[in-house]
Image (cartoon, rainbow, N blue to C red; front, side, top):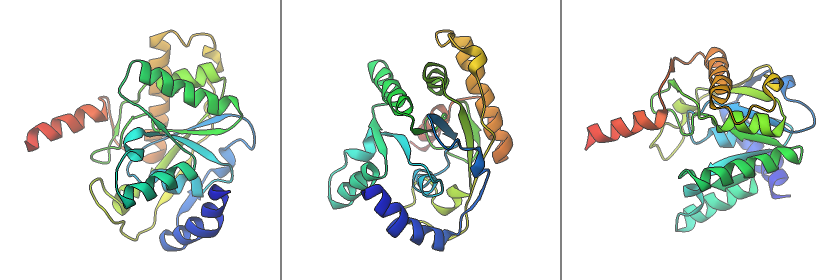
Amino acid sequence: MFYWFMKNLVAGPLLKTVFRPWVTGLDNIPKTGGVILASNHLSFIDSIFLPLLIERRIYFLAKSDYFTGKGLKNWAVKHFLLGTGMLPIDRSGGKASEASLNTGLDVIAKGNVLGIYPEGTRSPDGKMYRGRTGVARMILEGHVPVVPVAMVDTEKVMPIGSKLPKVRRIGVIFGEPLDFSRFEGLEGDRFILRAITDEIMYELSRISGQEYVDVYASSVKDKMGSRSR
């Protein structure tokens, strides 16, 4: 109920009026059944705009840090995210990563839409970086198609580190669904998982127009942090 209220009566109409988002390829999202939307990640607001622009409800796997802050502001953010379908996950690796995978599989097993950022974190400079193979495991184990999604200019509205958004138009491109059923039963093969992930990232780079860099975004952020110290 809270999700419907925010999307249709409060946040949805307000944000659409202010930022005038343009959208292409909405018909590429299946009307029913489990599906993964694999998106590039340029800004925190990606997770706010994407759910507002599709008819079906979308569940995102969001890092647990968003849900653990103290104070009134963080309390409001936490409940907004929970109310709009965000699922907190621990991205520390090991058993935590396996739990995150199972959370995502549960979402698509129930016939829902799961949103994933294969890069694992926001791009530090607008380029596209190497994808994590968790998305490929979910595709093969969940037996679902994946729709590539390109967020356009969201980093110009709210860059990393900014507290308030700038008013300008953004866009969302939904690419054609990718079918990896030919690899069914090979979810334990790390070379297959890498090949699937790379194909997804190639398509995301193609439809978004972003330059692709074959390293992890988290590594680039670490280097940036070490230089600033």
